[in-house]
Amino acid sequence: MFVRKIAIHRLTADGAETPCPLHWIDNFAMRNFTNDAVFDDTLPIADGLLEAGHHVPLDRLQPAMEDWFRRKGYLKSGEHLSVSEIHSRSLSSKNSLDGI
Image (cartoon, rainbow, N blue to C red; front, side, top):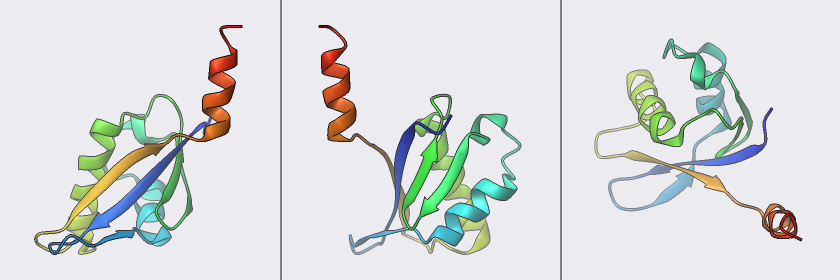
């Protein structure tokens, strides 16, 4: 179910990038005030790291998390989130062998 690794970073107004603390990510995932079942397939695993299923759309995850983090006071004015999928070498190697 949790086959994708997603990096979640806070971008400060001065351009610094830091992993979001695990408790921020956990707060979003465990309570899910988005009322959107599409985010149910998420599992926080470390600072700046979330595992997710294939049905979790990154283009919707980023604004939903950013909105929630702002409402909780985690993100300050001028700060934003960077949400991106991490592609591992082993996954890329496996996929390249599929066509053989």
